[in-house]
Image (cartoon, rainbow, N blue to C red; front, top):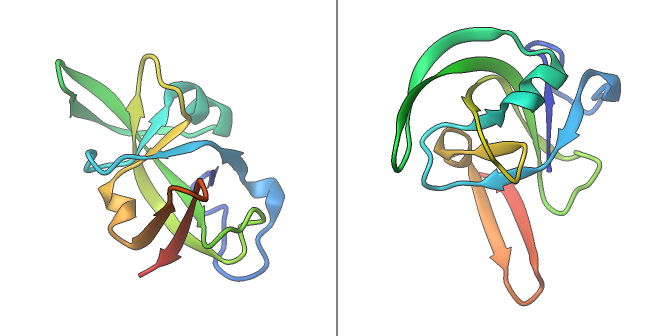
Length: 129
């Protein structure tokens, strides 16, 4: 789970104002260079188009919207987003079509994190590098 808000809505520090952001399910995608957001999520948050880019996937190429947003990734086993890693003004590429998650975290975000997967325990912990 990650939090997403309009760019500039989230300020760094311990005093995160909850009304500024909303929680969304996220998928870790080490095969993607950029992070992506579902069209419905971009509309729900009220993100505006910041440009258009060409998305390359396994079997197609298409022009899609880019958005800018503030992104919060919780660290450790946190559910209240403290501590957290704030990514202000991160670029999110629109992901159109069927997707079982709201946000894909690509290498642009993941390169700044250390991720530990405990298979037997069935949980993931995240820490800042």
